[in-house]
Image 1 (tube, rainbow, N blue to C red):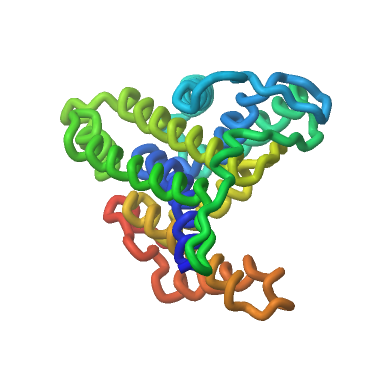
Image 2 (tube, one colour):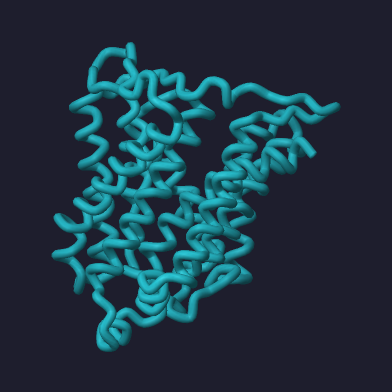
Length: 300
């Protein structure tokens, strides 16, 4: 039960990251490696700009809902501005050009954070009550794990309702299937892409809050490992498939937790290597991912 709980918590975090990447991949065919830096921006928006190691929280005395709302708003604004300034002029560019543009945006954000906050890691004590645990027999249940799982379930349900029960959700699904045909039928392409960036920003903001509660540490490359594992999750699940992104995120989280638990102690430092080896085996037999999208019928 302890392993199941740990796997569900880690898988939930990766699923949210993969979902944010999968939205843009499905609509814009954009592999946005700057998504990890959006997560970093959300985390750094919690503290005042200073190059010292000492951190001072911005939202002292605020309740959790107000903090979450402001952090998500900051990340959404950054994501929307990035789309308007960088990706909108590249609407007709190739997938490779968009990929290089996202790399450039990622390094630009990292450099900007280091200029404002410095390169020195910082400690943040956000919502310390969530780090308390409930012990039931041999199982230690952390409140932050339950929160991560619960928030992920709520966001997945909300996104499902949005995509299936609202006009903008229907337009996003149509654009993900065939963007050119959707525009010919009256779908406003920039509006749909803007909505995808906004939703991706909300997911990045939520991930930054959940991740900071668990780690309590800030660094300019904080979101980079999350973006890498999120991208791998979208590849394993099937590029362009939101269901595949979620399943891929949970699969990676479960796999890493199982290796951490059952590998011999001398091999646990190589947990990531075993995880990537398993991913390679999956892609050998399922080169399009577990849930390939018909709109992206190319080998990953």
